[in-house]
Length: 83
Image (cartoon, rainbow, N blue to C red; front, top):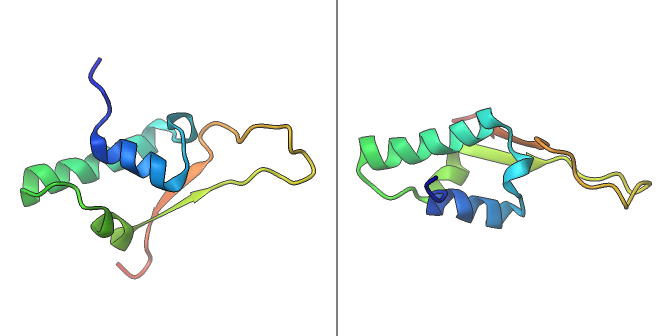
């Protein structure tokens, strides 16, 4: 199995996510962005370009239940409305 792309690892680090927080469709969105940058535009995936087009939100834990972990698949990736 190949290691994850450096851009994917950087995104996870920046947003404080783990791979388990993303469902397969979200991972596919990230990798499609990487493919678009590298294959079509001929550039390295650029984080500022990512932030221009997408919003990443993580469902937070409820304060009443601090011992529970954040659920799997709880991060959402949305295209910014005005883009």
